[in-house]
Image (tube, rainbow, N blue to C red; front, side, top):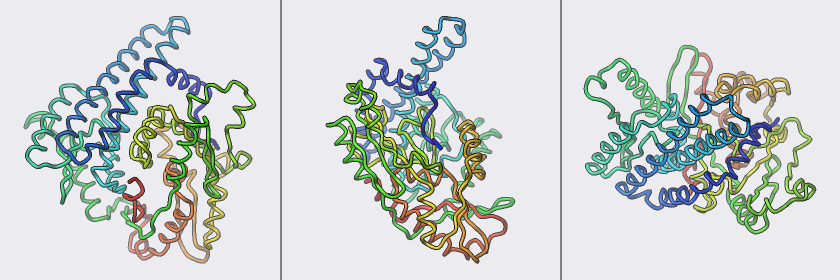
Amino acid sequence: MDGGIVNNDKRDLFAKVFADPRYRKHWPAVASFMVRSRELRNEPGKLLLLQAEMLSALVGMQQSKAALERDLAEHAHRKRHDVVEVEVGLGVAKRLAHVIKQIGDGIAWRALNYDRAVIYELAGKPQTGHVEPQSAIQELGAAGDHVDRTGNIVVVNDLTNFLRYGDYTSVGSQSVTVAECKGGKAARRSRRARRQRSALDEVLQFLNTGVRRMKDKSQLLLRQRVTARTHLATVAELIREARQKGAADARLSRCLAVDVHYVELLAEITDPQKMDKLFHNPFHQTREAVSHHSLAFFDQFSRNVAPYSIYPFSDEDCTDVMTGAVWVVSHFSYRNLARCLKRRGLSVSLPNDAELRAYLALPMGDRRRADDRVAMEVWRPEEPGSLLIYPATTARMFAEFLDEESFAEAVDELFSHRDLFEREEGSVMLFPSFANEADLWH
């Protein structure tokens, strides 16, 4: 199972993108965005000016992407070399837009105090696509007026992957509000606008009450008592070591290992045997295992995983991981996770190879609808009912370096809430979060 590693064709294209001078010339601007996004977190006016600058850069990347896509469609008959050049340019524009949005995501996570349940729900709506320059100007103007009036931190939603309701999100000392400012009165009264407002009201009600009942299932927000333990501090140390040596690695737990590569120094190694020795996957002979690359989501977004811009690394380290100057590859054993759960008296069923292969063959957008096929099933012997734990949930362990014992404690605690399940008809979908979510990222 190879959940985060891309196929060879894409890998070749991505390598060309990361080596391309057009990509690297933007790294200083990206680094500046990263530094200031943290420095200005408590200065609403200056933070909004930074977002205006980032939006301008994002619009530029999206316009470049659109032009290159047209070029590619109109000249598909050209020589392969010319087509590859356009494809690489397109990859550069996509990746830079993605990195800018990751930094915007970090602004949103900090503003919302890392409240995972709230952030996850606000990311539940399909994204609109490109930022329209005129709309962006209008949104920034309205957001600026709001900042002047309230002094609240405001996040312009188009700059993020996570905030998908309304045009900007305002975070005050007592409340969070979502504002829509596009169009005049007629637009705000349109059927589409009313549907969007209704969907947002439903989300806010769920966040406030913690319960949402649907046709055949209920959804519950559950803030657990369990505190998470992570290996993020060790990974930060490995990044520092890799800057000096070119590579560093560690076995973090029974389930988790990591390789860190500093690409500039790595490029100096020409001996294939030396290169092979830089990768340390202790689970390479285990079928129930996954490897995840920090560049796996090249231009895509997962609402289940925190953006690298909030990791408790230095500004430089966060920037280098996002741009690809530093690679972080984690290796995770589902087999050992199952053993961890079994030591707590739980029974576990993992998906088989055929189910995993069929799932991984699906396009990224279709995987969410097929999660049941590859969910880990956990239950207590002699007790009714079971938990289905989806790959998006376990991804936190190898993408965020969460310790499996914390995860196991959280699963164990869920079974102590059986009274919640028994009160609801049909199946129950849980949105759990650890007691110390905010502390993980400071």
